[in-house]
Image 1 (cartoon, rainbow, N blue to C red):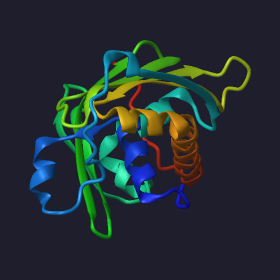
Image 2: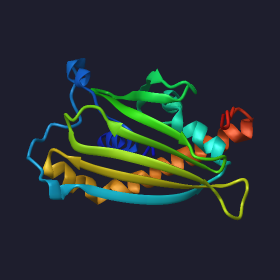
Image 3: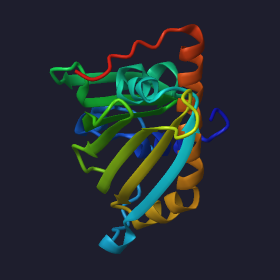
Length: 205
């Protein structure tokens, strides 16, 4: 992921969960996104990627749902935060900030974490502001692996549409590859924390 250009890192983070918040324009630094060619509804993009991650569903769920820790393993993420939590202490509004040299972007979204069973979890995100996107939604579906108890099947579903038709076109060229990088980053994070014995799973209540 470190080899990916700065602009692509911003795309990775927006695709993964987040969208720019209004305060970002007040940061006084250059924005990643400044093209305004209007997109139409037919430019909406959909992607579904699947991967096996080295960890149990509970372990993967802990890492994916806890946005506040993204700064610890997402490159160029200078801040990650949770504004609101539910009664189970799961995020319901969260975001992060991406910084690299003169670039600075802040993202925020509505998050919904569901524990459907001990074996199936989901984390969905919906943008709260639409300065950059007409549509930005993501969903992680986390399921127990049918044959390996120490692995988890993860499905990442993305739906987005930039307000700029040009960015929609450019994004379509590399959205799949950067999304795969996201999944690899989470796989490494789960594996590293599991190896250290530092993932505290809460389970269903």
